[in-house]
Image (cartoon, rainbow, N blue to C red; front, side, top):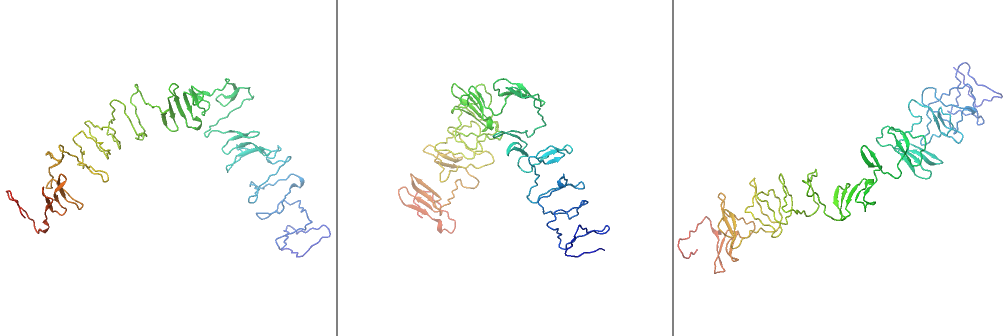
Length: 474
């Protein structure tokens, strides 16, 4: 099937050829995966060689790869496949040029460090897609940036020493084209559009005109100007709108006769007068004043609300609810009812009721008088006024009349260890019912008391007093 020549060396004394007869393949096999040519052999010549068949990856250890033997050279693929030049790892792909050599892309012929010519369909000749936050494009002269396209589309034209002028379309820009005039215009002229995007140099009035007119309205050319009328400073102006540059507009109206004024602060949603003067809403020609917060809450930050009319009235078409308030004078409901009161707090000697009845309304609810903490409830009476309970009419410091079912008219439940009941005359105790149920009776002329103790009783007993005067001895 072939001839194998196994030798250590083969020398030719003149030009020689190793061939394989017919169309057979000639294989050179070193046996060690390395085929070495002598170090003084610098050229392999194969004028008819058209294809080198290798593995998918072919490594060349040379750091410079020269093609063309002094003529133009081309690296290409033999089908419609891509040709990729890819550095390894973080290495870069460098297409070098200098002052007299170019990198030509497409069918470019104009010399330049990078020259691009050609087109594919309606796509741009140069497509740049920035996937980080840097500029889309930047151009410099001697390392100094002169022109850039920012990541947000801003065109930046840099000054010769510092700074730049930027052009940026609005977020919703529409499609607009501005056509510049052919000349430079003359001093004092301005660029004016015809409404279709064609700009021309037009004479403008001398001096500065901050106003413009559009859509039936007069407005400043710049929305950051403050407006001053009646003076040339915020302190001297009689009418001023300031704070427009930072979005916190404040309108002031000042009087020159008494230094009074009014401030409308949009940022803090406030209306106030100046120099602690009174702020008045309405007057003799004003109708009703309606305060409607939209949240059903109107707040007053001060501690006092004064009504200076001759007969002020607080009224409501529906139920008027007051959660908490302090009276400095009298509270009068006339013939109406004050109801659903939670807690009323009164200072010393500060409550006076001119009516005859305090009651609860509906629902058979209890009426409770309860002092705070260790305070007491006093029902005051004297030598000519009484405290009546139930339907009592007999004058007395405490007069009780009436009854509920079979219960006593007076029910006393001692929950501590004191007496159940005690009665005195001029501060001297005369009668007691002790906690154990014993009756203790005193005498007007004696400091001693008699005690009726039922502790020894074994059954109910009744003592009947005779119907005659005398002394009872038990």
